[in-house]
Amino acid sequence: QVQLVESGGGLVQAEGSLRLSCVASGRTFGGYGLGWFRQAPGKEREFAAAITWDNGITYYADSVKGRFTISKDNAKNTVYLQMNSLKPEDTAVYYCAARTYYNGRYYNPQSYPYWGQGTQVTVSS
Figure 1 (cartoon, rainbow, N blue to C red):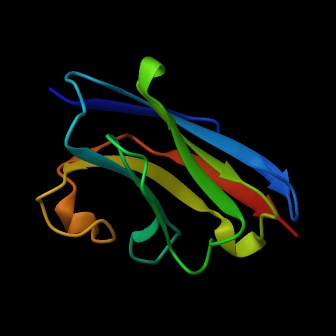
Figure 2 (figure 1 turned 90 degrees about the vertical axis):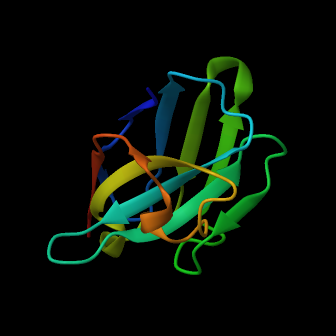
Figure 3 (figure 1 turned 90 degrees about the horizontal axis):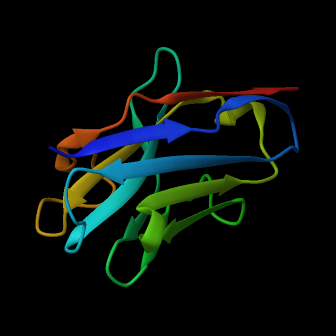
């Protein structure tokens, strides 16, 4: 059973930085993609960034491109989301998710069967 555990959220001032971590366990992740999604109060869950486990290809939403960086450490089974130049509109619960490559699209939350519990990120102005 795949398990994903996020950490690293918190309260930060605008223009500050945070690094989120997602520890993945329960299987080997060859052939998988891992993504970060976020959900603000009253809004739908939206794609932020994704990475392929085997070769590290990355994808970003336009809203975070140039400010967020997704990376992975295969030895630690961990995916990171480095968030710089944070804005109040980045405030949300951030979720880590996993899917197999052939299952849908990297930006579609419906394509991800496995999810972590989420970590709150709050950016004050």
